[in-house]
Length: 431
Ligand code: KG4
Ligand code: ZN
Image (cartoon, rainbow, N blue to C red; front, side, top):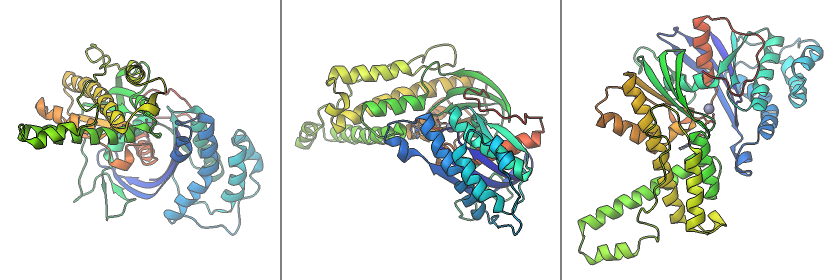
C-alpha cells in the first residue's frame, strides 16, 4: 500500500510517501520520501507559535513540499495532457486557502497522477487553523486524483512513532519497522504510553495497537509548554526544551566534576581554589515544587511550577528578570526546573506501569527527546527491577513528522474500520 501522509498540526509542515506491507503483526515500511519544512526560525523571533502565522506558512509551503517529496520518491512526471479546468471543484475545496489555491492550480494539474492508494492526514489535536491547511490540501488532492483521504489522530502517530527505529541501507530516509535480518520492534501489551509535547502531557494505557484508555492528562500547561515558557523567562530561544536541557546538562556536569574533585582532594589547596572559583549561585539552593507528584490520579499540572520559577527569578534577582541573570544563574534554574518536571513525569509514569503491569513503556512527543527524562526513566526502571521494556522514538522522529502519520494511516487501514469522509480539524481530539 502506497501512502501519502501529511502533518501540519503545529509548526512543521511534513509530508511522507511510504510503501507499507505486512499488516499490524509484521509491518514493513519503506520510506520513499520524507520532507519537512520547519517554521522554528520564524517563530523564534516571536518566542512562540502564533496559529495564524503558522497557517500562512503551511499554506505557502505545502504544495512545493509535496512536489519535492514526489521528486524524491521518483514519482514526479509531467503529463502531456494536463487535467482540464479544475477551478470549480477546487475553489470550493480551497475556499479558505486562497494562497494555496493559486499554487495548487498552477502546479498540480500538469503532474501525471502517481500511484498513491491512500492519503493520511492529521485531523487533530493541534492548532486548528494549521490543521485545516493539511486537511484542505489532502481533500483537494484526493478529489482531483481520486484517492481516499483518512483522518489521523496526531497523538496516535506519536504512540506509533517508536516502531520506526532503524534506518536501512545507511540511507537516512529509509526505515524498516521489521524485516528478516533487521531489528524487529516487537512491542508487547499492555503498554503504558507517556505522551509529552508542546500541547500535551498524557498517560495512556495502550491495551493493543489502536486500543487506548486515557489514564490522566495535564490540567493546565503541557510539559513542553512549561519548558517553552520558562525558556522565555530566561531569555532563551524558542523552542525552549532543547536549550533548557542543554544548559541543565552543562550545569549537572559542572556539579558532578566539582563535587568529585572536592571529595578527592578535600584538604588540598586545589580544592580551596576550586571552591573559590565556583560561580556565585553554585550550591543548589533552589528547590522547585513537584506538582501533583503524590496525587492518586495520573493527572499533571505544570502551571504552578512555571509560576514558582517566575517568582524565584523575581525575588532573587530583579523585576527585569532574565536581563539580570548570569549564565550560571540560568543554568542552575534550567537544571532545577528540568529536575522538577522529570521527577513528576517519571514518578507518575512508573506508577502507572506498576499498576497496570505494563510490559512496555512507550514515550512519544517532542519532550521525549529530553536526555534527563530518558536517563531517569531507564534508571528508575532498573532500580525498581521492572521487566518493562522502554521504547523511545529515534531522535528526529520525537518531534512532529509525517512518517508517524503514515504509520497510523497504515494500521488504521489494515484494521479496516469505517472513517468519516467529511474531515474536520479538531483541536482537542482525544485518543
Ligand atoms: O511533539 P512536538 O514536536 O510538537 C507538539 O505536538 O507540541 O513537541 C514540541 C515540544 C516543544 O514544547 C519543545 O520545547 C519540546 O517539545 N522539546 C523538548 C525537547 N525537545 C523538544 N523539551 C524538553 N527537552 C527537549 N530536549
Ligand atoms: Zn506532536
